[in-house]
Length: 154
Image (cartoon, rainbow, N blue to C red; front, side, top):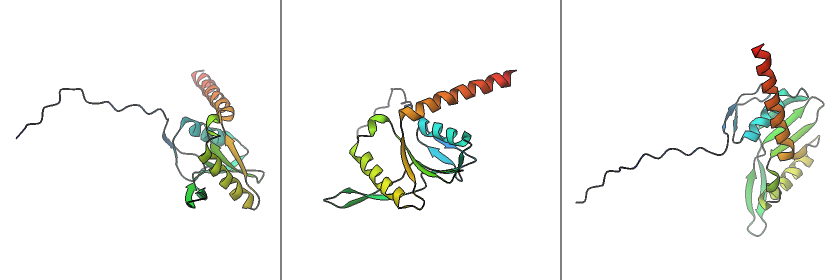
């Protein structure tokens, strides 16, 4: 019977994920947010600090859509944020990189979301928040944090 050779190599280190993940607790969201990207965390912080935002939910809605007309395959789409504003408006927000907007699956999900939004009373606005929206929010968040550090050090 052959013996297993003892491993002399170093144990593998867990590779660092390229995504920022974690849990965010918000005063405006009823449940803890298990974000899967730094951009989603940035949006959470922005919504928390925006005085016109009454409340918001994260991945709390499921919309079914037909992914293949021939096979009639039903899939589900879970949008990132549903935001209620103090003026009564409601907005559905999907956080995506600009270069992903042409993806066929993303377009099918967006079409299903727009149909769902139009059927609501009052109608809900659907928006993609891309690099053009999120990156300035990140810069503003970093600036706010620096200002806070300066205030605390005085």
